[in-house]
Length: 294
Image 1 (cartoon, rainbow, N blue to C red):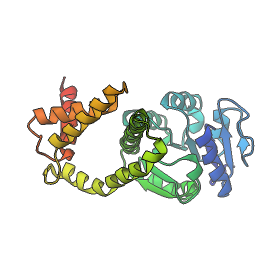
Image 2: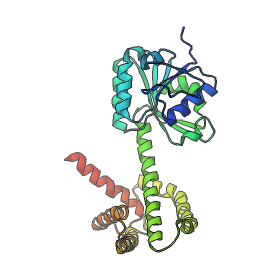
Image 3: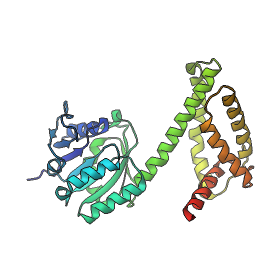
Image 4: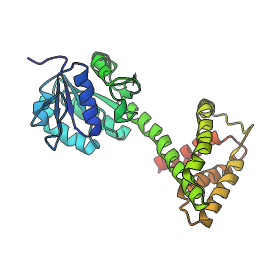
């Protein structure tokens, strides 16, 4: 007889191990499978020899692997065993792939929720974990008690299975462009014989300016109103010019800043130089719309 509290975890990379550990610690009988066997050492779990064998252990199957190519291969191999069960896919990828996987599952009688993990492995099972889910509300409601083992804050974002992935890529865009900007700043500092550690305290002040601005920027974007009351795109473009100039003087790759400068120049050419920097969203979307209509 299947234990309704049992959970299967497919994939035992660092995040998969964290997920399996959290489920087991919360009292869920946990069965795991990984393409390379022997990765379950130190976990209070049962290791299955095939994905299909692992899936048979319980009604909830959590997948967390490198990408959707791996997801597709694993789910295909266990498709018959998955029928009538719920797959929660926590693998990061694009919204369109999440929707395609949901369609694949529906055609085979498999329930499907997509998800995204927004915090590092060390947070899983604790109060700082943040997880996003999307897909049928009733599936999320049914499995929320088990998924609560992963800790922290969980949000169901709607019925569209691609919505969690859309949040994920947008939010990670913030993180990685910011990280690239920070690394570029450290490169400029080192070129001017400034230790990165000496710059870091001042850099923290700069990053602290961003968080309070988010709500105002979002309000501008949603309303379509971009008053350049305190600063505008023309001013921002001038600053970006200075950064590119100094970078080139030192032979530093100015690519990230050049990209920002190019977008600002396009907004100015479109007649929006006096608008708030939030107008850049419309500039970016105008190119996206042009791409979609070609």
